View (tube, rainbow, N blue to C red):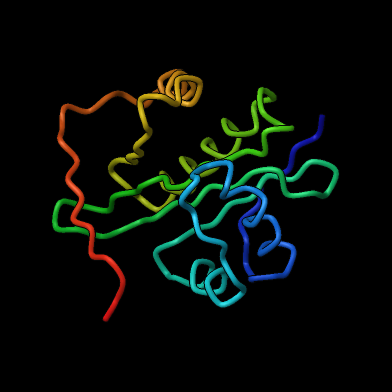
Amino acid sequence: MDVQVEVVRAATQELVDAFGLLLPQLSSTAKPLDRAAVERLVSCATNTVLVARVEGAVVGTLTLVMSPVPSGLRGRVEDVVVDSAARGRGIAALLIDEALRIAREAGARTVDLTSRPDRAAANRLYERLGFRVRESTVYRFPLGPAR
């Protein structure tokens, strides 16, 4: 199976459709992205959106967020998802490898990601690729809808 991983440069209808297929497989609460939302995602200077293609069709995606902070350039991998029909073929690993390459070339000191404990296969993959569990507590403040 030939897999191509590429950086997305434009918010095409193909990409909107791909997110429509993939995001519900990542989260049951994910809301569909319209073209404007995909454009914001792709055009944001801190984001690098990657897609994986098999026979030309998008079967996976990952977003690398890079942020300069006082302690150095940091990377964060967000929303890794591979279509259920294409899982188990190393596609997520190819996406992550490319994200790590991009972060390394940009001079990032670290790359973080989070994953729910119930995503056992994903967690095994991340550890196999060299990610280590960090002794930290993640806090989230829900802002809710804008008023």
